[in-house]
Structures are given as C-alpha cells and as structure tokens.
Length: 564
Image 1: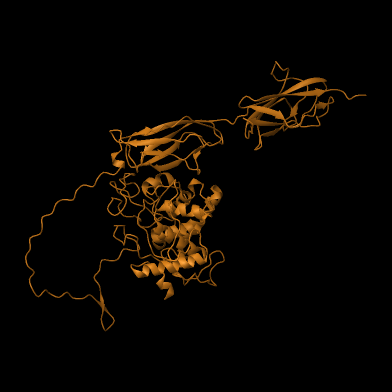
Image 2: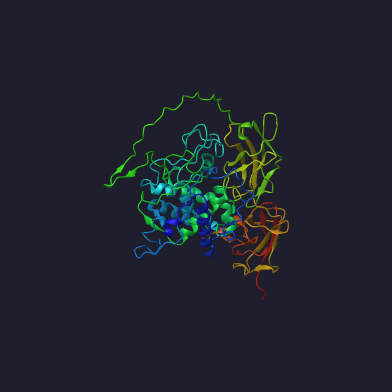
C-alpha cells in the first residue's frame, strides 16, 4: 500500500502529502540540491542559471509526467546482477533493456569526451522517465528507435509556449508550430544543434533512444557544468525544462534510480499516469492516453456490461443557440515581428591559439522600424576549418535576446588551428538574413627567450657537449607555452644560413643535421634541445633559436682541444 501511495501525483491534499514524504526521503539520503523546510516542501534554490533563459530549453518547457517514485527504496533481489541491483518485483525500478543500455552508453561516451561533467546515467534515466516514461515503457525496436513517434503537444501558445515551425515539419510533422519529439522530448530547433549519433548508424534521429540519450547528455554538460555539484545539477535540469516542479520530480527519480534499478524486457516498462497539463495538451497517443470507451459495471456473473442509457422523460425545450464570433487571431510572437539582425557593437575577434577571445559576439533583433525585440532566440554557429568552440566545447549556442533585443554569445575558446573562420548569427524560427562575424586565431607567440643556465658550452673536437641547451620563452613576462621554435647552427651573427661545419645534432638515424624545425615549448614555456656533438674543427660557433612572435636567442658554442 505504501508503494502505491507514493506512485502518483494527485490533486488536492494528496499532492502535498506525497511531495512532502518524497522530499523527506530525499533529504534523509542527502540527495543533491534538495533540502527540507518546515512546510515539508522542496526548496531547491531553483532559479535558473543567468546563462540559461526560461524560453530556451531543450523541450520548449513542454508538459511532462508528474508521477513520483515509490517512497520505499528498491528491494535487493538475489537474482539481480551486481551492476544493476534491484528487485524484479519493483516495477517502477525496472528500466527497459534497450533504454537502459542507451543511458549507460551515453554516460561512458561523456566520461571520455567531457570527464569534468561527471554525468551519471541515472540522471538520463530520471529525465527519460519524466519526459516519456522511458520511451513508453521501452516501446522501441532493436536499434533503439521508437516504434511509434512520441510527440508533445502543439506549441501554439494555447496553454504552452508558442514556437512557430523551425524545421519544416521534418522532425515533428508539423509545418505550422513545433512539437517536442522523441523519448527525450527535444524541440526541433534544439535538436538541430544538439542532436548526436549515439548508435553509429550515421544519422541523428530524435526518435532513437541512443541518439536522444547522448544528445541529452551533451546538452546537460554544456557551459562546463559539473553535475556532481548540486548547483550545476540544478542549473542543468532547469535548462532542460524551466520548472521548479519539474526539477523536483527529476531529482526524486534520480535519487530513486541511484538506490537500485534492474533491467526489464523492452515494451514491459512501468508507464506513468499523470502529466503536468492534466493530459489536455493534445500529445500523441502514449502511456497516458485513455481509451475512449464508456464506463462499465460488473454484473453478478462476473461479466462486464455497459450501462444502458435511460430515455428522457420530457422533451427538452427548443432554444436558439447564441450568436458566436470567430476567435481573434493570436498576437504575433516576438520572433514573428523580427525583420532583421544588427551587430550590437562586437569588437575585433582575434585570439592566440588556446586562449579565450576577449571580445564576445553580440547581435540585436529589430523590427522593420528598427525597434529592438526581446525574448527572441538567436543561434550562433561556428563555421569554417577551425577547432575553436564556445565555452563548454560546443560549436553552436542559442541565446535569448534581453530587454534591449541583444543576444550575446558565450565566449569563444580558441583551438590549436590557426587562421580565419566565421560565426554566423541567425534567428531561430524566422527566415531573415543572418550576420557573419569574422574571427582569427593566431599562433602562440613569444617575445623573449633566455637560457635557463649560464654555464659555458664547450667541447673537445670529435666529442659531445656535456650540457644540453635549455631556454625559456615568455610573452609579456609570462611563460609562453606551445610556441613553435626553430634551432639552427648558423655561419655568423650576420649570416643566418646553415653552417656546414662545426657542432651538429643527430636525427633518428644518427645522421648529421644542423637545423631543427617543428620544436615547441612545453606548458612552462621551456624548450630543451637534443644533445650537441662536435666535429674535428676547432673554433667558436653560433646556435640561433627563433620562435613565432619574433623572439630570438643566439648561443655561443666553443670547440677546443683539451689543455695539456
């Protein structure tokens, strides 16, 4: 009975009781981001991160399932494997096999590509439970694709956000408005940049649980969020669906799945029953769609019969229906009023390889009359042959314009590839000309070189120098790491051509070389040259080291016979 009591959110007093009991259980286990208040309600400090706008969520803030997990923890089962503890009898703890596999594969992938995120697969399971009931109880084929589409309600502004079509109906089949799609319920405009190929079939399909789970993981790990930190965990969940109730529901399932789960066959998972919109949003048939049949009654013999309607005893009076007026057309959304994009004062975009760009890209959305438009999603996309990314490692960022109509992209982080590239700004859900911002990554530089030791470099003919040449590169007084350098044994101070006699290096085959190219300073700006050798010619020789940025150092080498 206790398990059944805690399984669903219902109206009235039961809602408060169930939530209070669930929060108490979570608080006792010190679930991240959850505290207990005297009123018995969650206080998750659930304000979104400043860099996440309420109108810019993975799901478009679509409805979700509000069922809570049982208050009792999953019971260990002797038959359960050690890596997935749980009881076969705990239906809510069971996750369909393919769906569970997709979550775990996504966790493994993110552990390699974004180890600092610390994404637990149980978080994906919690979101998958709340968004689609684990792909409708695991109603997927062998490749992980949903057997029937899972679509959220039409986002037409009636009870939900209004998002006009952004994908031409490619993902959601709707050419007028957008709908959340697939087991993780991505809206098309978010999937367009966050979609991933999780099963290696060369496609990014929001209806495939492997693709959707990996995409959700990357979405939750952007902005360099660390999900082992409770504040970042809250920000990430709220960015998926900006609702405190949503946050609390996901945290409840996260804690429940952390205590134990088990694998169940595909198609047999437990289905949720209640939605945040009370099931009135027009979602496609799913686990909460009741059959359209009349109520039944039980006959004494055990059979089920439909009640017979009684004929009316009186004829109802004839009435004239009131005159109706056609509904007014909805007011245009802010996005629909945008006529063009303008640069909002972006400065010169240049940075040294590996550094963060000092300047951020800003664009302003305006009406035809030049009036700024707030609450419009602007997408910034890095294009060209570059490994530069936005902070967090993504090549695409979507930002909502502020009250001044300005959207400012996250800072650019230069990669190691040098050269020019572009960042394109476009309005999501509106066909207007985009803006291109030119950016350049320059090679790492040094403006000074110095030896790390002052000992004289001497050698007798035909021998090897006892000391290695080590130098330190700096740029504006700071160690210059990753700076390209070249070392050449030159003829004279005024003639930098390669010498044909005197000291030399050896290549991998032991052959004489007097120029070393492709050198690079280490993380501390240090560069240690290989061992130097002397031929039979005595004299004073010069070794010149040059770096990107113009730093030059000339080192004197002496070859002389030993004193008698």
